Image (cartoon, rainbow, N blue to C red; front, top):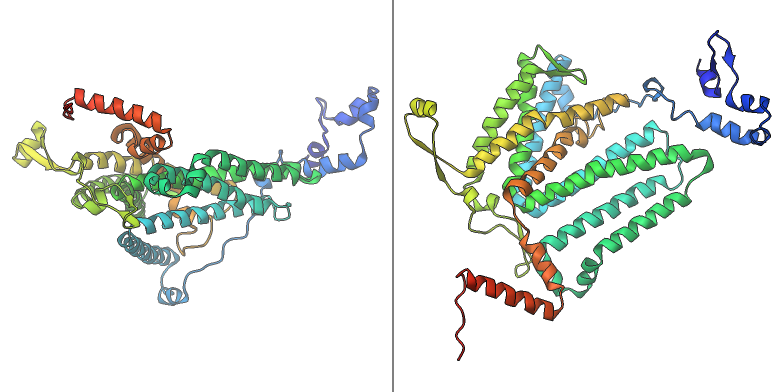
Length: 461
C-alpha cells in the first residue's frame, strides 16, 4: 500500500490499480509531461514523502541518558522506581529553588541574565529535536542560520528594551543614539541578510526539508524569545510582577504533583496520563492561597515593589521609590457572611493581593495547559523529555513550558489593568525632536499645567 501511494497509484473501484498521473498523461498524448527527466522523478520519489508521513513514520529518538548523580543513585538504590523518582525530583527542586533565591538576592540584573540563559537553552533544546526528527544535520548552513536568527531577534527585542528604559543613558552616547534611532531598520536589515542566506543555501534535493526547518526555527523563536522578552518587561515593572507569577506556577507544579502522587485516582487528560483531577484541584487551592500570602509578604518591601530603573549616576539598577497605591494597605468592607465568621467589619489588604488572586488563578487553571501543549508536542515526536539537563525533571523547557504562557498573561494584565503610557518611551521620543519642536511642546505642557492649577503663572516684570 505504501509503494502504491508513494508512486502515485491508488486502487480503483474494482480493486485494480489506477495508473500513476504521469502514465495517464502519457497515455493521453501529453508529450510535455513525458519529457520530464528520470532524475527529477527519482528525486520526487525519494524526498516527496515528507508531506505524507503519519505519526507512525516519525523516527524514534534515542532516549536521553540518565544524568542522576552517582551519590543519589547509591543513596536511593533500595527504593522502588516510583519513590526513587519522587526523591530525585524533590531534592533537585529544593536545589533549584535555593539557587533562585540566591539570584534574587543578587539583584534584577542577574535575574535578567538568568532569563536570557534560560531562553537560549530552551531554544537549543527545541531546535535540537527538529534536527533529530528530520535528520537535518547535513543541511547546508542551517545550524548556523538558526543561531543567527536567534541573535537577530534578540537584538531587535533587547534594543527595544534599551530604548524604552535607558533613554537618559542613551542620550549621552552618540554611537548609541545612532543605533537606537535606526534600530528597527538595522534589525530588519540583519534579518534580511539571514533570509537571503537561507534562499542561497537551498539545495534541490532538500527543498521541503529546508523549509520545514525554516518554519521550525521561526516557531521556536516565537515561543522562546518573544516570551522571555515579556518576562523581562514584567520585571521592569517591579520584581513582584516577576516573582509572584513565577512562584505561583512553581507552587502549582509542586502541589499538583504532591496531591496527585498521594491522592490521585482520576485521570485528568489523555495527553498527560499521570495528571489527575485530585492534583489539579489541590494545586488550584494551594496556589491561590500561596499567591495571596506571597503578595502580602512581598508588598511590604520597596526592593520588590519598586520599578527597576537604571541610574546613570551610580551606573547600576536601583529599586527605590515611594510605593504606589497598589502596595499600600487599604481597608475593605467584608461581605455579610464573612463579617459573621470573622467578627469584624473591615479587613486591611494590599490591593496587589487582589490582583494576585487573578494571577494565581490563571497559573493554576490555564497555566497547566502550557504543560499539556508541551506533552502533546513530545508525544507527537515520541520523546519523553525535551532534554536530560535536570535529573528527574528533564530539560529546561520541561520546567518552563507553563512559565512562558504565564509571562504573556502577566504582560497583558499589566498593560490592560495596571499601567498607563510609558513615561520613559515618551521622553525618549521627545529627546530626538528638533529644538523648536521641543520648545513648542514645553510651552503647550506649561500652559496646560497652569490651567489645571499645578503650576503658578509667572509674573511679568
